[in-house]
Image 1: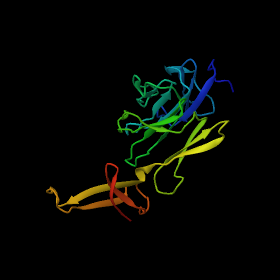
Image 2 (image 1 turned 30 degrees about the vertical axis):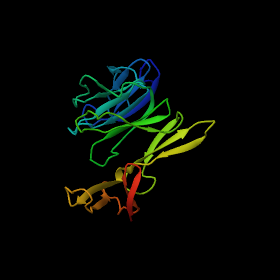
Image 3 (image 1 turned 45 degrees about the horizontal axis):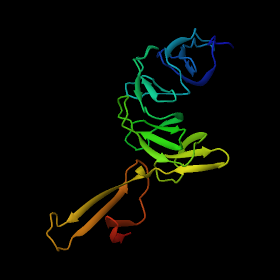
Image 4 (image 1 turned 90 degrees about the horizontal axis):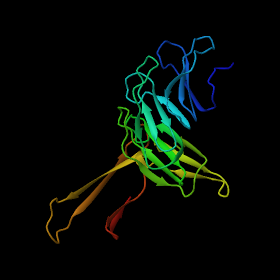
Length: 235
């Protein structure tokens, strides 16, 4: 079936964007991003331009209003288009400027119930943008993977309840780089007495607990340091 898009599409997402109970398509490519409203019988209405060009696309409810929104990766940034629930979208908001991206995933990486964005760039890094739950995102936190990757995937690879990232690097590396998500645990620090005076003994306590729903009990060793001086360890 020819949908009449008239241009090549680099990525396609499906969903009920106009809330009529029928599956619609959204396709992005080198010219624009288009909505093809579904007729419910395997055919679609003529493409309608809803945004600029993109190399990747994700559809999800980013602001928790029950309507599907769009996230378009354009290479130099990504745009969020909040859905109105009738097949139209609000003006795009741009995030992540300043680098060149090649792929992205959408997942709750910090366990706060809000969707976050992880985007792989051509410089060999992965940037994570924490979602605020209203369709906007915090500034990037960047993790170095050493070389540009070809694919980006996500999953809990170490079974700690937190979603990790996996980067596939092409030749000459031909390997996989794991970016382990340490948000599976949180650490609270206390000292007693507090405040303390000079030369007074102080007890430091670290309470390590799971910060992602459904994760198990953390295990390991905590090291207390003052600068480069190790004050002690506890298991």
